[in-house]
Image (cartoon, rainbow, N blue to C red):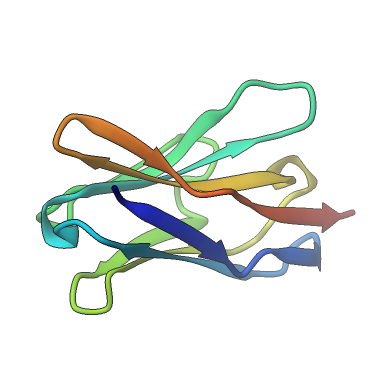
Length: 115
């Protein structure tokens, strides 16, 4: 079973940056499709960004041009660089791995953006 641990959340002011990291244990990381989701209070969990096994990235329109996803297969990590943060980006961010038709989730890391 894949285990995911997120890190890097915190409190920043609008316009600042944060870098989230997710470390995966177990499983063949290089063939996992990875992604970041977020859930704001009172809202459903939503997709932020994904990265395929060959490095192709997808971004939700709300973060396009501000966020960048990357992966390091040797380190078994996937990062989310978040720039120009807005108060609307405040949420718990979850790392996701899709591996052998199963979805795995981390426990999440809180991102708070003050205006």
